[in-house]
Image (cartoon, rainbow, N blue to C red):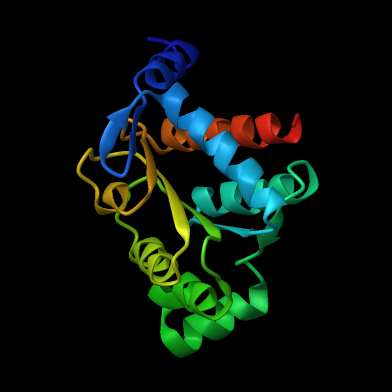
Length: 183
């Protein structure tokens, strides 16, 4: 099977749930569009967290949600902040500590992890939950990964290929920002 055929096949096999209840990806996307539009109206802040390629997605989409989606965003990737918190508190707390200090009730976190088992992303989800934020998780690899159970909305890509999982995560978020930008 070619690359594009595999990508399309995986997109058709996305698994989505809302608070653990399976829904279609299209239904979940419609809920997210409505939620993000409401969050924008209420001036809630959006945070995105990921490592490696997922960090690249987080940084890119932070800019797109700010500029194109007209949402308030919180950038978790300032170099001095990352290195300071990593040095003092350990890398597993680099996002969680920022969320503990900045996140407010009903803010949003998008937690992105191909494996769904990155300790710092799991800690970020815990910190967001403690701050009464709402959480969208994007994962892949193992269907029973721990991050997949941490969100209000969860999207799972059934693949163990970093490239496929990351490409689909990026496409999911790009679609979301494009749809809220039109409204």
